[in-house]
Image (tube, rainbow, N blue to C red; front, side):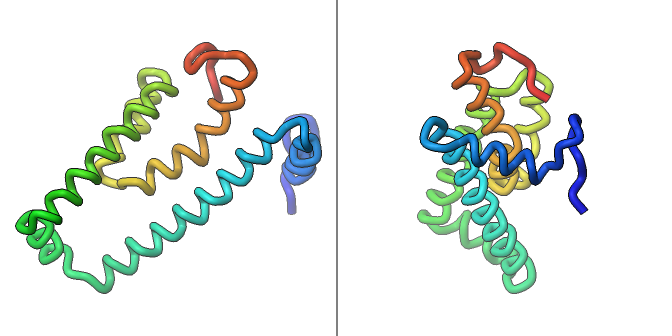
Length: 141
């Protein structure tokens, strides 16, 4: 069963209308739909890899290797630099307390959390920016 939205329009119908209205005049809408789909697939693949590693690997041994091998240290530095850059992007788009709520879990949940932000929040920010608003000019739901 498909739930109805605010005006009695089903979510599926609203999606179809947005997709149909995003013909050649709205390539950004199509791009955002494709971006979300790719990010959902990438996020699910990353979740599957983490689940596999949890059950098949030795977390302590991997940690010892990463901190003792020069390439392991480089990998960790690269990872945390990516976390910092993701946090800066989120902070540029979100308001103060909301930014903190999105940024705080990144060191613990990693890029799975960053993917969730890009799926949930980024398209709305881009739509607002393309409509003429700045990064923080209007409130989002």
